[in-house]
Image (cartoon, rainbow, N blue to C red; front, side, top):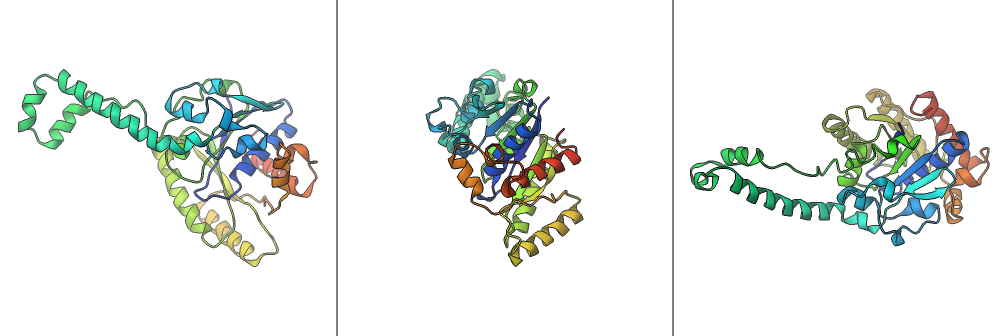
Length: 303
């Protein structure tokens, strides 16, 4: 079974895509025989762009997997050697709206069928209170999709094919991200050491705990990962110290790895591959992701 890891944060610009793609590249270099699937859940399509794939021209994407039950295997594109991508494009921006629209339509049909099916219900409605009516209707209505669990069992088949499945999520906590957290084994929370980082992490942890309680009791918080770090910046050091103390109090892992602020990751992407594939392992800016892999191995997140 594949080890499934998601990079998640409410805030944009926290290097989720950079981290997901460079982790994939680093894993390939570390385990050359491993098969890796990158799942792009963000409508910006930056994961695909990292490998010079134009997801805007792809017919079926993660949108179709989530809302139209297209099998994951049918949308997979080979990106590089043993790295594949399940792409996304701007269609993902409409997942919430389209789900609500379709769900409202299906709900009306279900209620109509229930009214016809339950003996004398129409006649009895005038004497029933709302609670009694809902109780009767609930016996007949079965929701086809759960807003927070749209990927339920969708990865069961490809689970057997890949060693690692890495999810890049959008900067929000609605249907797409919640559905991702409902099916992964581990979540890594990258954060930029800024003024309001602690508050954002606290909010995110609350939602993760809700997903864990309702859908995925085995969901593990692999750790908090500082990104875009400038060690010379006093604020960065103060924020990281604060979050480290917070993580210790909450008994949540805080990675020792520091992903540095650098344009190197962007320039590597412009060349069509993540830096962990194009650069030497010892290069200053890619070395951090290999340190992350070492920590994930030490913490038994990956093997």
